[in-house]
Length: 57
Image (cartoon, rainbow, N blue to C red; front, side):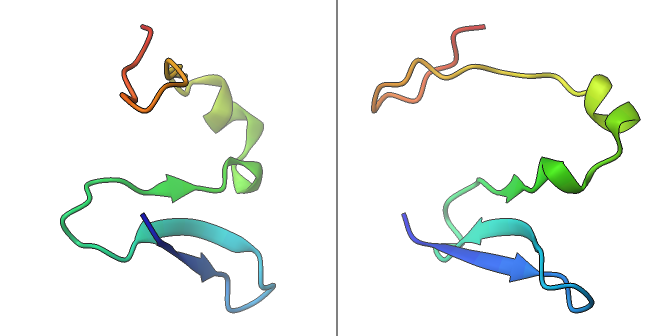
């Protein structure tokens, strides 16, 4: 899967990524740009690390 990286026009930081293929239902955000209060309430999920990409929780 190839991805497009999106940047802030003001500072150039990567804000998020999205797949080039619109059929892929996935995206990612740069959590380093979030306030700590937002991160504290976020649910963290862990992948099994295999190609199956199944969640352990």
